[in-house]
Length: 454
Image (cartoon, rainbow, N blue to C red; front, side, top):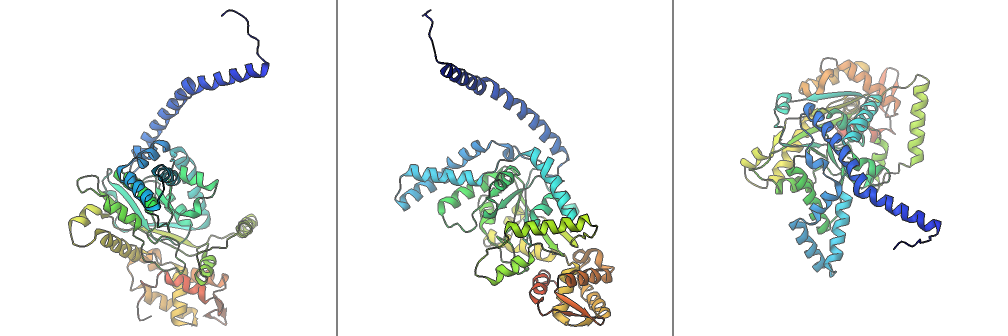
């Protein structure tokens, strides 16, 4: 026992390394994790004091623990057994497949990243690109939402800027957990988005096991009071108009709702822009056979460099207005308590109607609609017909342009002339033969609000 043992230097170094790793994993790392965890909890507690909807402990649960909760959920376990039987595979193989689905879906929220980086970046980008406006159709009702209720923001999907804009404008209410599609599963973007609390969904998946895992996560998050944001249309509108809702996520929430438990309050959110950054890409996709957006990194880089050049030479101008309208909230408990029929259908119908009613009428969509409806006009005729159209709409939809239609038409005419959608000749404005698709795209966003007789 007391004899000297000779070891090669490399082996001795390896033993020391293993000893150091063991010491760190058993004594040092737990202490460090506990220290940072305590600091995080105190920071979240301070944040919750100023948020309308506090960050729930569920959102701070370790990602590994949440994955375990999902794959061992009784409903998911049954789905695993059914999937294994239907596919003729061992249950352990189906179990591993469910685990992969859970790892793909579950986020890893970071409060410091969300409030320290994401909100600031969203604020800067939104205000750099647009004149941002926020309208609240029923502010007292929004303020009266129970702090313990689960709030779900339900939005129309006009642009990928929707994520940025609503994240910025909802910052005083809570941290939003978005449902994002496959486009965001690109490294390193996927890690950043997951750290901001977003969860990934396969919008076109018909796999029952995948749906069971996704439904389980949505139910757990909803039951725990996590503030969520979703796009019921299921993707960007290719035509500019509102699309029929996809019921998947709404059905998961409604099916798992317990009237005796936490209420779920839906807030309809309507967005519109004077300039959708992806407008020509979406129009091209609508003409094609699929939703493949050919926005290569080179195209995006050239566009960004061009804007930086305009900014450096003092010629940069923002892309008009971007307006977000928060509509009257809808309680799932109240909706379920009255009326007959499928609650998911009634929920989707009511939310889409409130979103449609709240879509802001902005200068570019307004002028685009006028050009398609009346054709060639003088400047005075544009103003007169804009004033007549706006007078039929509620002030909440028109906003500040209700009192100054001339400012709206001036901004709309200038923007559409710059984009080549209309042309000006001898004091008269006319649609450009090559700009019809662009006019249709912007006019479609408000067509449902405008007077039918044109």
